[in-house]
Amino acid sequence: MRISDVLKGKGDSTVATIRPDASVSDLLALLANRKIGAVVVSEDGTTIAGIVSERDVVRHLADQPDTLRAAVREIMTVEVITCVPEETVEKLSGEMTEHRIRHVPVVRDGAMIGLVSIGDVVKHRIGQLQDEAAHLAGYIHQ
Image 1 (tube, rainbow, N blue to C red):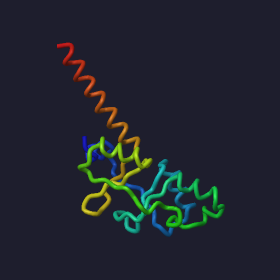
Image 2: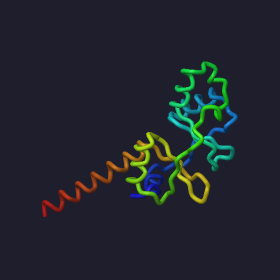
Image 3: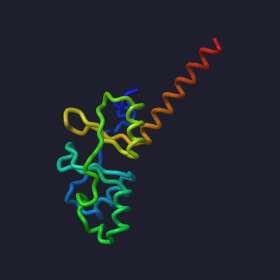
Image 4: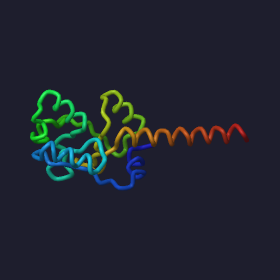
């Protein structure tokens, strides 16, 4: 299965983004309103300047109490791991586990077209395993 299949299964491919100059308070409001754990930092909604998650906020709050007034660019992760729609779910799940990341932007021709979470990847992997088990059970009962 490919990442493009995961994106199709998600339906709405709108990726939540925030500008680098937005405040961390604005970021928290966006995360809470959308009930999500991470946002891609982007000037225009398609290029990727970084990614920022709940974890980033917590880590910075521990050392810098004024974090809520800071700009998102001050706490975001700049080195963002991305994938292409043709990448396999198995390969991406391995990379997510190895790098301990939970959100990966999907990019085509330099533009962001979606975002997959570890939950999306696990859901599709479980679906694959259930299909394989059903096929094997059907084969055994023949």
